[in-house]
Length: 252
Ligand code: SF4
Image 1: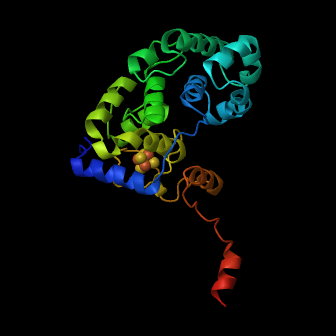
Image 2: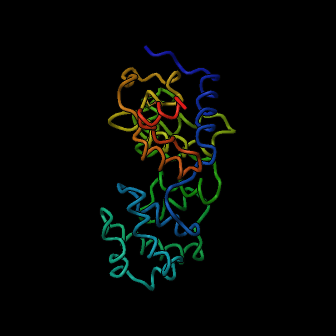
Image 3: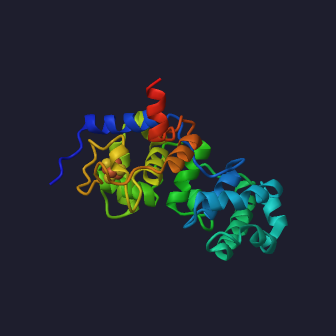
């Protein structure tokens, strides 16, 4: 059986992710808490990129519940039809906009219970909004966080709620606010679903996953690693120098 994580292991795990990604942030584009909520609802089973492509023109004309209702479901569909489940999502966005006006004076509520009572908003979405819009140290467990928590052994669990509660017990207070961003980004760019990039992983020595990929296995494509680094404000890896050019420079 894999060795359990000690407090020191956990501290080191998050300190490494923090050093690697000093300013983690959501990759969803938004303007205010309302547009964040809409983007999160649209992002269910869709990539952040596809959501950003759709919301860029949408939020220019509808960045409040009132404007979204004026836009109406039919025209909203015109903006989001490239996103999966767009019909249901359009209905939810209009219904939640109406609910915000009727129940919360047009503002996004700062409470998990009130958020989860809105159409199309589940626990994970509520946690994202509380964390990103209101700086609450909530941990939203999406598919990436679920995979990383289970693979590494840092907070194993059978359901997202198990993992969320395990992380809440485990993650040191000072890392709690950014924990879900670090875990999502780590899962999205390094601990990927099919071929985790274990040889370049900053927590490789701490991770308990028995099937780590080995040296000589998959390595990060420099373009995706550079793109991820750019989004997180880090210097990305340099393109490898062609052998011949490198040796010519070395011989000068
Ligand atoms: S060592 Fe591999 S499996 Fe473990 S966290 Fe890193 S990328 Fe994921």
